[in-house]
Image (cartoon, rainbow, N blue to C red; front, side, top):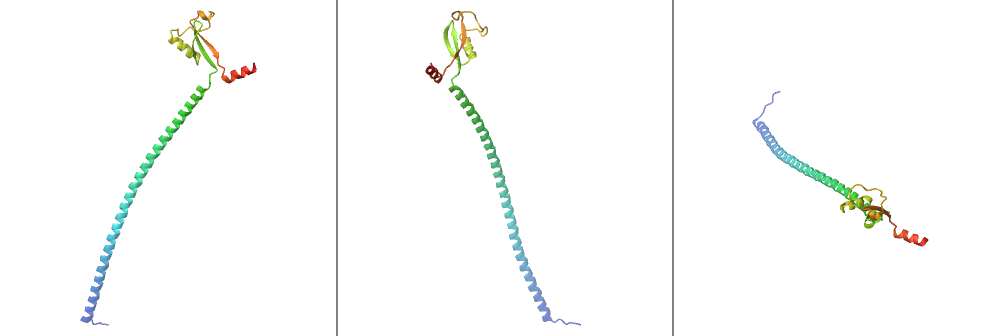
Amino acid sequence: MIRIVTAARLDGLHADLNAADERNQRLLETLGGNWVRYLRSVLELNEERVGAERVARAATEEAEGLRRAFTAAVLVMAQQQRHIGELEQQLAEARTAPSWLYLLRSYGEPHSLHPSQEAAKEHAVTCGARRTGWGPSNLPPAETAWRVEAVAVVSEQERATRSDAA
């Protein structure tokens, strides 16, 4: 079958083709605009992601710094608590009266009281006594240059108890 195409028909096909081309052109322009907006959105999201990662890194570094500072503070507090405990123990020991004091005598006369025999001897050395030669002596106290005697300490409560019993 042979079909005869008329000029009017050919002009109609050209018009349809031109309309389709124009429609395609508008669609391509719309697609191009949409593509540009999509790319801008992707770039903006990427910038936001990079910014968020930067903020997260800074927050992580700050948290690590705070963790180190907290650890250091806890260590200082532990040391301070230990030191306070030692001071409290020393204070408690200082408040409890010793059961013995050591009387340092010079030629039989009382010279000074000391918390330990070693402390009394050290004091005697600073007053001119020899470091060695401390020991029992058969000489009377008045003839001995330096002598240390242990003296029992009786608390006020014990003294009151003893006087009540007598």
